Image (cartoon, rainbow, N blue to C red):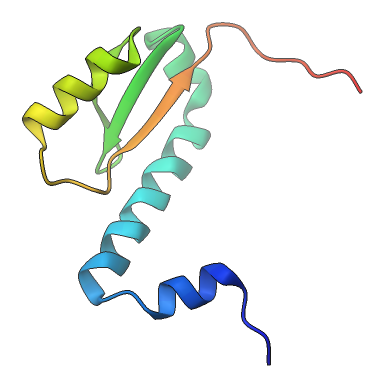
Length: 92
């Protein structure tokens, strides 16, 4: 039976790493599910999400990373996402 790369990676993680990965995925899902609300609150900004809430926001990614790293230096489950003010449309 062939395993995908992600399954092999997860299988080789210890319990704390699995927890961090799961929390990071949950934060990303939360961003996706709340994107329209986030768009009005944080237009054209980067946000950092931990435990399903925005912990920092900034229009400049480097500034956001400085804030996050200073307040949460050892946290690996924080999700960072750019929130566009306008909806994106793709034409194929």
